[in-house]
Image (cartoon, rainbow, N blue to C red; front, side, top):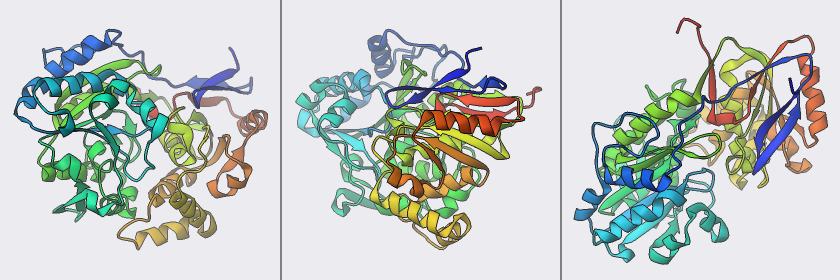
Length: 443
């Protein structure tokens, strides 16, 4: 057996040599169906011809057509995920906008709104890469959401159960036709990405985001990968959708090679649920036992461009890690740690230590910006020793709070050292896009 494994890293892969005395268990999705006739799949989904544009069999019993819902609209806003998600916008944005134009909506009344949440804006060539089709820029307005701009948001009140202030980008709320677009994949807080998550936190004000990313939300056991049942973020997101008056969604699923596997369109909650039902058959990977060593990735470009996003790869693997084990992760981090706010949060975590840091968070009704990612890191670091191979500058190493490497040979020697006396290593090449769990063989 080849002792090298290839892990997603930046725009390519990173080869990592494993010790020859261990038996690696490589954890991947099952082979997914692929739509090579992408144009037909997209048109089929948007026109609701009964096939949903999917590579799988079956479909929704609640079919709806963008062609029909656009007829009664005078304006439209399409929310798209920011550059951190490999959403195939180039496949569906133009067909969707053409339908809106054909329905009589003026091009000046159609907005493509980048759902940045509290991430940085996407501009210039990066924005063109994100949209993936210059035709879109030539025909409609493409703009970023800014979560700290008070004037850009409408205050819709407070959610009834957990008292979250609901402030959402007015360009989305006030549009006659509201469409969230995105990728449905595991998410380490909200269960699954896409759908309602594109609206909140994607288009939410900082007050909204900071409230439902506070310690109480983040520490809830139900706020976990691949779980929607009782998930407090998911439940608040659904309530926010109700408060804005509903929306529609274009949901996509891609395989490990970033090929289109599924696309649908419909009411945001039901269509997202259908996409989740599809993807969970592939992204949840059963294994027979826990491992003392797991080797994983930050999922490659665009997700692994910051240390902030790399935390998802750490958390994604913890359910199969034995307590006190070692987690080895590769993540390029070409843009560095992340935002200045995140740098401050990491400084706080490292200087206070995990226990004191979490005690500070417990006293805050609103989390400081990006503090929640530092809290999520503690879910992994409290269970295992974390080792990261990246291109981060050495001066940033202390702020990560983990064992850092910029040399693959040193990284490999650490894996070999940790593996002494052990036989099994788990390897997750795609990182947080695959969520392994220990399964009873009788399930």
